[in-house]
Structure formats: C-alpha cells, structure tokens
Length: 296
Image (cartoon, rainbow, N blue to C red):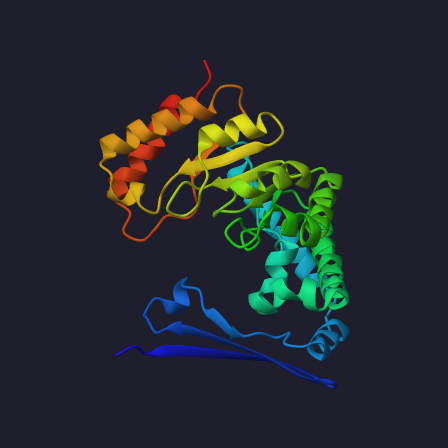
C-alpha cells in the first residue's frame, strides 16, 4: 500500500493567506534528499500574486553576511584546487514555476499577457538583486537553473519571446559583477541551441545524452564552437550504472577526444549521480578523465 507524505506551507498576511501543498511517496529517505511534488502553488490567481508581491520581504543583512561567509569558507577549502560556483536563487522561469503551476505559467502569456509580464518582471527584480549580492562574494562563478524551460516543454519561439528577455537580465548581471555564469539544463535542449548562443551564458551544463536529454557532444561542439563552454556528456542515468569499468574508461576517452580539441569543454556527468551507481565505475570515470583530459 502506498503511503503519501503531505507538507503544507502558509504565508499569512493582513491581505490574505497564500498556501502551498506538497506531496511525496513516504520513504525513510524522503526528508534526506527526495524532492516533494508541489500539488497546490502559492500563486493561484492575480490576487494571490498581488499579495505575494506586496509582502515579499527584502533580504536581511544577516542573510547577506552568511552568503559572504559561505564563499570565504569555500575559498579556504578549495583554494587553488579549482573554481567554486554555487547556485544562485535560480533562473527566472525556474523560480516562477515553484510558485505557480506550470500549466498556468505556460498559458499565461496567451490568456493574460499583462499579468505574465508583471509576474516575470517582479521575479526578475528580486532574483537580479540576489545575483548582485552573490557577485560581491569570493565565488568565481554563479549558477543559474534553467532546466524547467527545456526543449521538451517548449520551442525556440516561445523561449525567445517569453523567457529569454528575463533570463538575459540575469546573465548580464553576473557578467557585470565580473563572474562567470553557468546555465543549467540537464534535459532536452537541441531545439534551443540558437537561444543559448544569444543568452550570454559562459558555460552551459549539462549536455545530456538519452535517456535524460537529447544532446550529442560532437554536434553541440560543432554548433557552439568557441561561443560558450560546454560541460557534461556522460550518461549517468543508464550507462554509468550498467556499464563495466572498462566500458566506462573507453566512453570517457571517446568523449574527451571529441570535446578536447580547441578547448571550451568540461568533461562531466549529465547531472547528479544516480543511487546504486557502482563505485568502480565512478572511479574508472575519474581515472580516465585524469589520464586523457590533460593537454601536453
């Protein structure tokens, strides 16, 4: 028998109450990393948005200080070993989709364009401010989550008209701070390649081959050239879990041979490691990358 765990959140204001309901199959691991599915969202109507916007708080001085301290801690640990990059608050469309149902959000530009514009403009304003704050820290780069606006949900025209103008503000904000921007879409993306060229990101991660996405490293490398850095390429959903260490080493060698010429490529998995991934395969991938990823 399936048992579900519900989590209800309420924002209580003088003008009304905003409520969100999340649900997940009950599992001992649920509160240790498994994501809840949002069933009811805070912004269900124009009135909800007005309440949300009216009472949205400014970031506290304490929160800003904590961000600076986190960057200092990362710098102390990582040092010259590599670059360190946190996620920011998120891409504009990603963050909007956490507060409003995706079905509504995708129809808003057609059914209520003025509301959609106001909603996205508001989200841009506070997300931009978050990246301005992060831009004053010691981080080398800042991440932008863009996986909700993926090629499986929308095409180039929708992205350019209804998402690009808002996401572009964030990449420009990061650039103005002197940091690198790393834009995340771990899913379908081939039909958005031309959009990504114009978005102003420095790095796109992660190139995801099937079954998670539809990208192919050789094709992407030829399309983007030196216009942005590509990161990813290794299928960790199926291949890394089921292949032998020998097959993993061969695949990593092939990927690096494809991505390495001319640079602008960071070898990586196509997202997080799946549960029950064999440690021997992870080790094989790391060893192969270390061996073949160096320039002579």
